[in-house]
Image 1 (cartoon, rainbow, N blue to C red):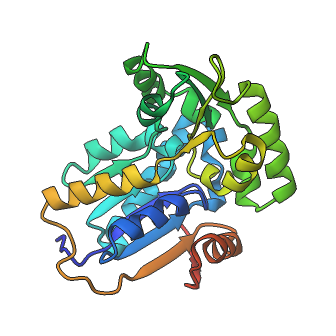
Image 2: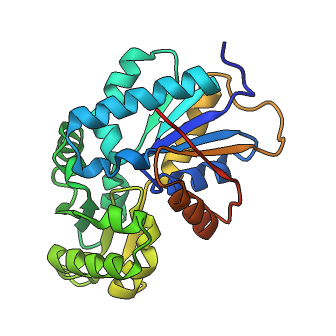
Image 3: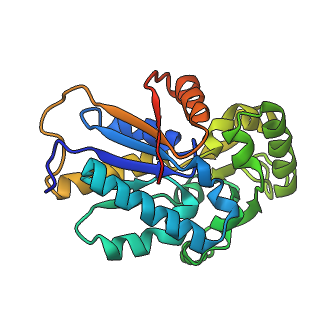
Length: 270
C-alpha cells in the first residue's frame, strides 16, 4: 500500500538522471528518493528498443517490490520514448513522469526560430519524438543532431572526449548566433548533456540559450503527486538512496562532483 512517506523512484541508464534528480530535490525538498543508475546496461541511447523496454520493466518492478515507491520518474529520454507507454499500461495506479526533449519551450524562447537539438539516436528515431516534432510544425526549424558516444563520454567523465564530441556535434548542427538564419537556442535532449554545459558554453558563448528538462520534470512530478494526494506530509530532511547495476564508482564520483552528495552507492544485481 502506497503511503505519502514512501520514496519516489528515479532511474536512468547511468549518471545522466542525476540532472533530473537535482531538480527534483530542489522542487520537492521534503521527499525521499531512490535513484538507480543502470550503468551495467548503458548507454540506452545506442541500444535497441526491446533492450531498453526490458530494463525499464525490470527496474520498475524492483523499485516497487523493494522500495514501495509512490511515484516513478523515468529520468532518461530514450527510456521514456521506448517504454513509458508500456509502464503506464502495466502500472495504471502508479504516477509516472517521463522526460522528453524540451522542444516546445525552446520554440517559444527562440527569436531566430532556429533551434538545435542534441539527443541520442534512440530518442531521435523514436515514434514518440517524431510525434512531438509533428505537433510543433511551423513553430520553428529544428536541426536534429544524433550525438553518438557523448552520453558515454560524460558517463566516464572523459573530459577530453566530451569536449571533442561537443565541438564536432555543435559544428555539425550549424552556425549559432542571433542573426537571421542562425541558431539561438540549443535543446539538450539527453539527461547526461547538462553535465557538459561548461564545454558547450565555451563553444557557443553566453548568448545561446541551453534548454534542458530538469525543472519542467520536477514541476510535473509535484503536480502529479499533489493530484494523487501523495506529497510528503511534513518537511522532514529527505533521504536519498543511490544504486548502480555496474560501475558504482562512476555514480559515486558524479554525485559527489555535480550534486555534492556523499551518500554511498550500493550495487544492485537485477
